[in-house]
Image 1: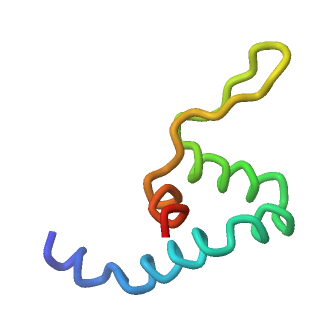
Image 2: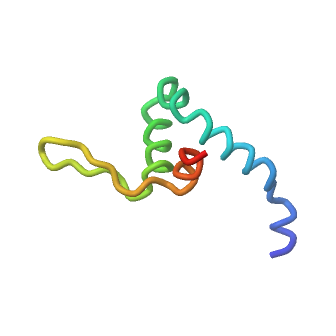
Length: 70
């Protein structure tokens, strides 16, 4: 287990997460369908709802809530 953690690039993962949160709008506009779906799952982990008339969102990922409060 220790060996596996040594190979894990924590700084790289955190840097990517920061980029994702800071640039979500641009990533959405520029992304492919697959990339948009991945981003949507990251922002709304419980998915979206549709009642036949309107689309609703479930709880937002905590990382995005924290950024919105800054």
